[in-house]
Length: 292
Image (cartoon, rainbow, N blue to C red; front, side, top):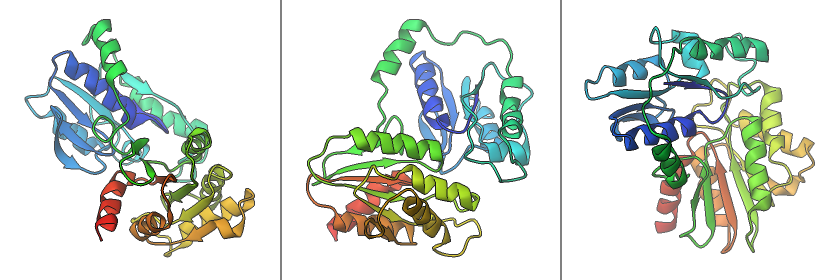
């Protein structure tokens, strides 16, 4: 199975892999969080390209593969196989426009549609009872779905760590934060990939406006050619343009330092949200900060 789209790819892949595993299959899985066979990691980190898809499908243990196909991998390397049983295109949003020569949704849809065009008639792999039971048991935690809306309540405050980058994800996280009930205050650490156009980075920042009491904007570790602090500054500019007051915004260019700074400033009963492509690392960073 190939899965692509602007948002939701990794979660969909993990849910599908869990269903296939429950049906007795040895599953090969590639996502932006890693490359796995039978639940065991072959590598951690972004494995959403054709190279890693080929790696897991070459493993003789694998009898079902669920492969996340990101836009960049399709553009640079094409599709790794002639066909698949199932191809899923989840959505086409504006998150990656202005990159690699893709400037319109129609162009982006053409790229992502390669996944659907590779699909042929699927064979059955899991019974509807199995599917229902797995989906009911699936949790957005650091075991089932690391780095995607993971809540940690064992600290003096509540931490939510989630991968985010685009406007749609920002709006969804902001909506969650508005509805999340805490007696304290709500603080956000946010970064975005630096190769997005300036107007997109401003829009990403603005998507979070009004949902938090304070904001820390930072660069991602890989600045993608932007000077230090520039991406963080554009996120902050978007917040200001959306009406967030200056006193509620802090720019801390270094990603991990920004997370530790926010940790030091929150109080008991607060909510701290870390929205970052590498948000899954946040609990480890904060655990070290708390120990110090």
